[in-house]
Length: 226
Image (cartoon, rainbow, N blue to C red; front, side):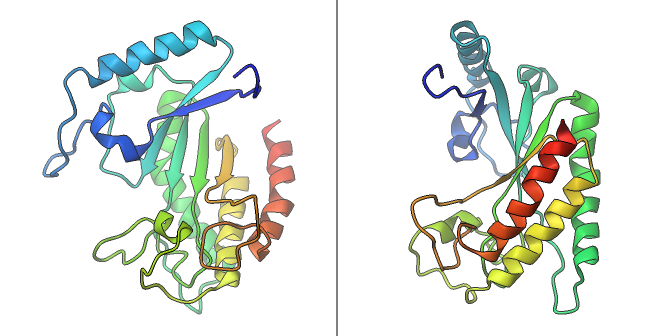
């Protein structure tokens, strides 16, 4: 961390779910984690704080998700990095204000209570592909609900065609909703690919209209949080 001057370390990637101290919801088939998982994580956290006392530790929360953690465990962190992809109703008649209201309602009902209870920063991280299904929250939401992450790699997964305008439209609505909620501590565009511009269905906004939207809003949100 001294070389990179990193200020935040983010832990708890859902991809390692079997090793996380998860409390399954009733009537789910999630496997129980090891009994000592929470103890092992607390030990790791203590080691990180001992060797890098200045760094802040954030824990990943996926919303919506079946993964839940004990309040006692979450107290070990300075804030939360929220993987956010709520489904929204998106049709040809959807207006920017309508979409903003949908996103804002989701934030108020699902994330504001977390901030209110913990009084810790929430960084929202969204993954929005440049396709017609960008507002659905996942691919095939009524069946498999496959993560948009699969679109960031070469895949034969059947999806609709490229649509940069829908991606930008959804981003604009997210930024508008977040700008009206000062309790949101940050915003991240997931899937950004720095090396080259990808003119495909991936979530990377580099070189796409959504990048212009982000370029407009990020400086304003930074001023708002200061």
